[in-house]
Structure formats: structure tokens, C-alpha cells
Length: 357
Ligand code: NAD
Image 1 (cartoon, protein in one colour):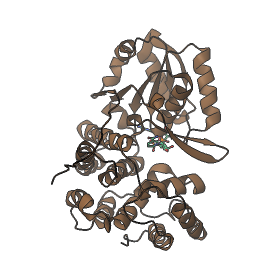
Image 2: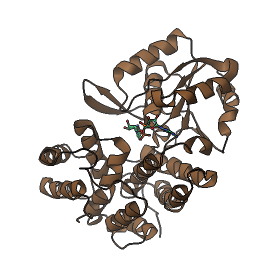
Image 3: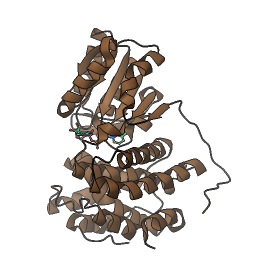
Image 4: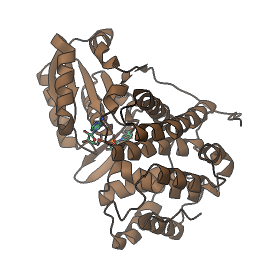
């Protein structure tokens, strides 16, 4: 297997990344390293106790906490949080949580240019990208801006132990999706392909161990390692049909983010395998089937991943509209995005059937 390409361009952002169970206890040292002294701690309302723990960890380096991060980063909340950051004189942000909390930190950084320390507690991978999705008046838009790229990431396996099993599985497949689409991205590089394969390998090996024992710190650490690799791929290369479908289903039908990724992934990869068989071969080999879509479908079955869009709340009557939207303004994709073929893909995903090529 070779990922050599005759032409490619690479630009890496300067991000400090630390791994280690308990690494959050070095938070003050990391804040000082940024030459900061007044951190604003961010979480969701569900993780308010984590914000309290982090306030204690920060000691006299905490300026305040804001625990109202929400899925899809509503602009009104970001504006409020940015005003609060200015009001309390915060000089850095500490975002502890999944993609929603990281998104809030990025949205504040966009408005204030404050440096960010992110402590991820899911596998979404947003911490490794300069991408921010925001919602206003029910419309989700995405931007890429160097100001939103977090400066420091602390991966602490102890914090991901509390992630419920269903969320663990869905979030892992969300991460695998970044790597899978990275394999055929037009602007992939040898490094992104290597990271994609190692990221998927980490999940393939460690996720079953996490399911057997959610408190297994070594297995949790390996899944976080996979999340970092897969998230870095997302931050480096363009995504295609799979992410477009999930963006459409999440944005227009309000389906849950990670679960939608989990359901769609085998179907989108099966769709693209016809046009990107060689690029997807490492994935097929990793998950042990000649057909990459079937390989992921089988893996999803072994980890009890969500399999059907109907179970996520999509109505059968929405499938036509979803296919229309997904085929409109498609992202670049290795295979032509044909509306009727997408409709068939969505039907299989809705019913929980194996993917159709
Ligand atoms: P999330 O951040 O919305 O978290 C889901 C729920 O799980 C929340 O209630 C959260 O508090 C809780 N939770 C998180 N970690 C936990 C833990 N360890 N223990 C217990 N509860 C925990 O979910 P997500 O899937 O991580 O993020 C989804 C959001 O991230 C979406 O809005 C998506 O668009 C965005 N995202 C952005 C990027 C990017 O690069 N911009 C990448 C991936 C995802």
C-alpha cells in the first residue's frame, strides 16, 4: 500500500497537542504557557459539573464559566458568550466537551481572537479543524478561518469514560467518516491518508474494548487518539457526499449529528466505492470485506451502531425532499451525485438495509 502522490501541498497549523490520562491537571501550566491568566470555561448545560471541576482546577486563573453551549452553535448564544468574555476580562478560553462546546469556543474566538484550549470529551474532532458551523434563523452556514483553530488540545481519557455507550459508538463512526472521506479527497496528501488509516485502525481495535469495559482507560485513550487523527484529516482535506448528506439531514430535518453520521456512512461509502475503489481499498482491508460499504455496515452491526434513519425520526415522506436537497449544490464527489441514486441510498439508510452500490 502506498499513499505517494506526485503533486500535493501541505500546510499545518501550529497546534499543541497533549495526550494523557489526567492531563487536565496541568491546565494552569497550559494557560500560563499561552501567557494568559484569566480563563473562561465553557461547557454544555449537561456538563455543568465538569465546568465546576475545571474552575477548581484553574484556581485563581479562572475568570468565569459559561455552560450554555448548544448543538449547531446558535449565533445568539455565541454573541452573548463573547460579550460575557469581554465583560469579565477573559484572556483565554477553555472548552471542555464535544463538538457543540468546541463550536462555542470557536465562535467566541472568531469574535474576540482569544486563544483556545480544548479538552474534547467526544470523538467529533472539531478541535483539530479551523471550521465553524453556525446557525441563525434556522439556517446553518459553515466557515473556515484561522482564528477559530484552537491553539492547544488536551486529550484526557479519564473525561471520555463518562460518554454513554450509544454516544460513544455514534461519535466513533462520526470520526471514522472524516477518515473514510479523507481517503478519496481531491486534496489528500500522503500524510492525511496515513493518518486516516491509522485513525480508523485505532477505532476498529479499541472501540470493541471500550464496549466491553467503558472504564478501560487504555482503550478510551486509543479511541481519543483515533479521534485526533480523524479530526486532523477533516481539518486538512475537503469532504464529499457523506458529509453533504449528513449536513442536509441535520440542517433541514434536525436529525442528531453523530447518529446521522453513523447511519449514513456505509451507504455513502458504498455509493462512492464504484468511483474510488483503489482509494478505499485500505478501508476495506481494515474492516475485512472486499466491498468498503459492506465492511463498514458489518462493523457498525458488531458495535450496535444505529442503522436506520427511521429510528432517528426521519419520516418516509421526507425522503424525496432530502434527496432533492442532497443533490442540489453537491460538494465535489468522486462519483457523480445523481438524484435518483441518492434517493435509493436514502431509502436503504431509512429502512436499515445493507448499502446498495
Ligand atoms: P455534542 O458536543 O453536542 O455532545 C452531545 C451531548 O453529550 C451533550 O449533551 C454533551 O454535553 C454530552 N457529552 C459530551 N461528552 C460527554 C462525556 N464525556 N460524558 C457525558 N456526556 C458528554 O456532540 P458532538 O457529536 O461531539 O458534537 C456535535 C456538534 O459538533 C455538531 O454541531 C457538529 O456540527 C459539530 N462538529 C463540528 C466540527 C467542525 O470541525 N467544525 C466537527 C465535528 C462536529
